Amino acid sequence: MATLGTDVQTPRLAAARIGTDAGLLLAKLHAAGSVLNNKALADFGLRERSFSVLTLACSGLEPTQRELADFLSLDPSQVVTLVDDLERRGLVERAQGRQDRRAKIIVSTAGGRRMHTKARAALDQAELNQLAALSGEESQELKRLLRKALWGAAE
Image (cartoon, rainbow, N blue to C red; front, top):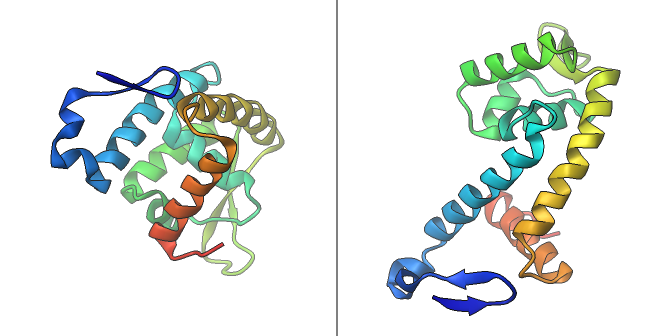
């Protein structure tokens, strides 16, 4: 293996053409990040998916379960299970939507916001660890390019 940066090493098989495929690189980065994220969130009884729902519930954007499922690329039944668990723990609640009174939105409780603040700090550290081979500017550029590739957002 060739060493890149600090502790990051390039596997021998990365020399194959697949080693430059965006899909593979994104999948591998996500898989490695998920391991780090789930370790960081374990102390809070959260995993990436439940943390994502909690984050969106804390956002003030008043997401519906359908919006959560679409945004997180999850089946609606998975979102129901995640919301049920967070609701049982007193971290989120279902409320009547202000825009559409028929829609149920997911909002955080005060306890959910406190939990989110602590978990967010742990997750931020996990991200720093994962992207340690990148400078701060490179890390921001990576995120900007990913947002642009996903949503065409040229920020």
